[in-house]
Image (cartoon, rainbow, N blue to C red; front, side, top):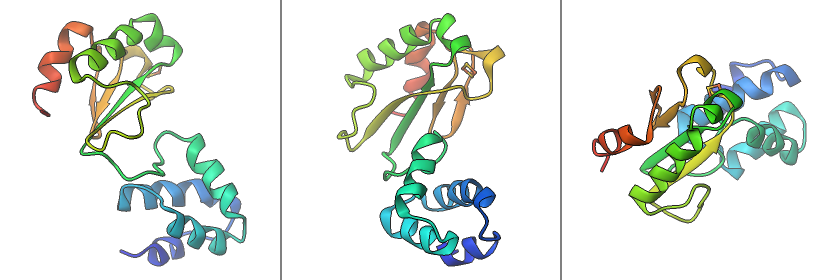
Length: 146
Ligand code: FES
């Protein structure tokens, strides 16, 4: 599947920018500058608007994926259920810092609501969701990925 083929599945209207971004991100792992420019040409808008839209949504990636991608929800519901203790425990066990963009192997991101508020804290590892995560569960979850 090429970017051009994906774009042809959408009418070039503003309401289709986000769905197209999501599909390209899911298909290629992220939306790089070249593909963002193709989108900008297709939708007849600036590339900066494409990236503005892309960076607003956590599900659209603008950087190449790391082999281990971890997202932890810090939305209000998860935050009140110790999401930040979960984040600190992941940082401690993996010896990384949330938001570090320079680790080529592991990326830990703190993201906004993932739509599973009743089951928080929510952790997503390489697109697999873990619900009601506690700091004590982190070791058992992470050992399957290391
Ligand atoms: S607040 Fe965490 S899933 Fe909604």
